[in-house]
Image 1 (spheres, rainbow, N blue to C red):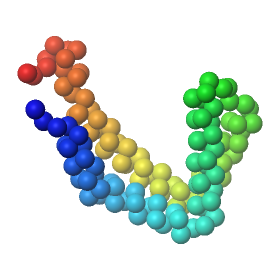
Image 2: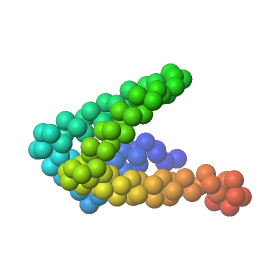
Image 3: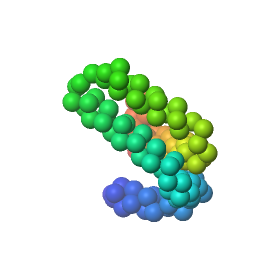
Image 4: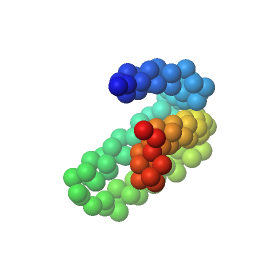
Length: 117
C-alpha cells in the first residue's frame, strides 16, 4: 500500500521547483523591498486574520470591520508590488486547484460509480 504522506511530502518539494512557486517567491521578495507597500500588505493580512478569528468564534462583522478591510484593499489596488504578488498568487492557486482536482478524482469516481480498483 502506498504511503500518501511520502507522496505529499515529495509533491511539496516538487512544488517549490515550479515556475509558479518561484514567481510567487520573487514577487514576495520584491514586495518586502518596498517598506510602505509591505507595511500595508501586513496590515491587510492582520485585518483578515482578525476577521477570520471573529468568524470562527461565531461573531458578526461590524460595519467598521468591513469598511476597514475595504479601505485597506482600496489603498493596495494601485501599488505595483502588491498587484504583482496578487497575480502570482492567482497563478499558483490555479495550479493548486488543478492538482486538487487530479488528487480528488478517485473520490469523485466512487460517487460516479467509475472508481478503479
